[in-house]
Length: 312
Figure 1 (tube, one colour):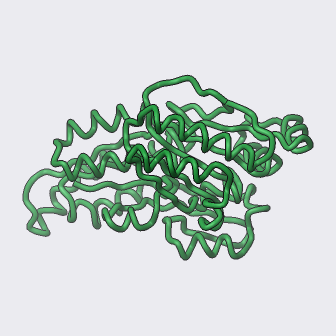
Figure 2 (cartoon, rainbow, N blue to C red):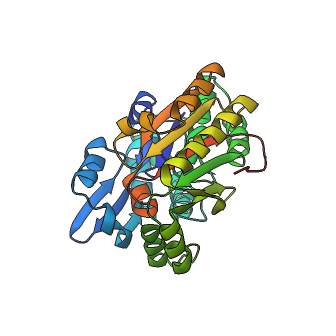
């Protein structure tokens, strides 16, 4: 069994390589530049080096098409695996989940002839899971998928468990630039960040703390200043870690140099809480797609926990 994700699922590159996780890429076009967002460190660094963050709100993004998903599976994955779990960011914010579901019909129709030609016996299974959250918020679902596969669980049991984790996966986002966030929202026809709110927030340095949860992305709090906001988010997460998580992992993705994370206020306390609770603290570069949508320098953070009221 194996796992495939879309490129906007934020996880460390080392984790993806260790567990041979396939990545469904996203094409990003900014002015005359084209980037293939496949979580390649070199491509992400090229985006950062060209300092495209301030104008990438006008970017055009093309998620992996139905045809591209079919090709990835029929050319590679059906020959390498007997069962693949496809995990995507929430279907309410991206068409990629719909593309993968549509592609699965053709894959399941044609896989047998591909495997027969290669001398591979037995059926092939493809299961699509909507993580119902965004960016680093998808990490607990993906980490749990790997754990269950390694534990030898059945596909049915894995799917049931991953659906439960997806329903309890929390993805938090803190942007640096409200004007950028509004410009990107306007580009996508999303009215969630109004001009007045952006102007007022920027003038007072008040930023929304956004949450992706069960398919809904909306503000759950306001903080004054980016660094103060990060401290509030890290301290809140440390509290949730001590209360107990459904999957022993917290993932942070950052739209910049990961070396800056450890210097942010509250990070040491979060790391200490994770160590005390035997929870892995992952650091991942934000995908190019994530930076285009939330803004360079933004942070997203994900964990899975029983349903609770956000207290900010």
